[in-house]
Length: 271
Image (cartoon, rainbow, N blue to C red):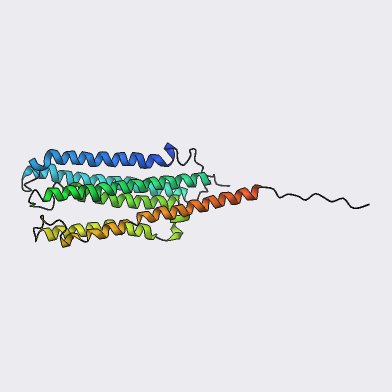
């Protein structure tokens, strides 16, 4: 029995094609980080100064637990769906139109991850620097650290791994099991892991030295490696552009095969 060919009902660049993933994802990311910023503005100076107070435990350690639990639940549900549905799709034939749509969705995820990285590694670090130049910390769990270190960074790792699982099962010609683990994702994940390790080193250093007046302190320098490694995200576009070019070549090849060869007319024999 021949397997059914998976075909998309929408164009790759339509709303339900590739754009929806990026646009809805960026809206969701913005709402979450804006909500966390409003929470900081409401409770940071009132309940976030004394880490020994019961209010700090309620408002800030409670937020930490809620964030980590939310990231864990989202990770389990999303990864479970990606793997379960992807294993069913992996060996099924697809049309070129569906393959292009999947690349468009993948690009939408790249845009979503890039937008999340802006909030995580640009907006929040600037907020964190201004907070610690204003308030003397008595714990690593400060109101500026909690949204950034205990939501932003774990969620970035989840989004990057989810993007890889999507590519592994839905764009197997580029990221399938037989292709090995791509350097682009290695650099992206190495960036996030390096950042987590650097956070631990950073908090240890801050427990020994008070350097708030010099934000570019030497033990902040390793954060630069994060930016260099995160540049691996640009390779994802390059890898999938190569796949789009190969899809176009396959379509052209099929079109040439469909054109019947011209049959030369018979030349009448001379009398």
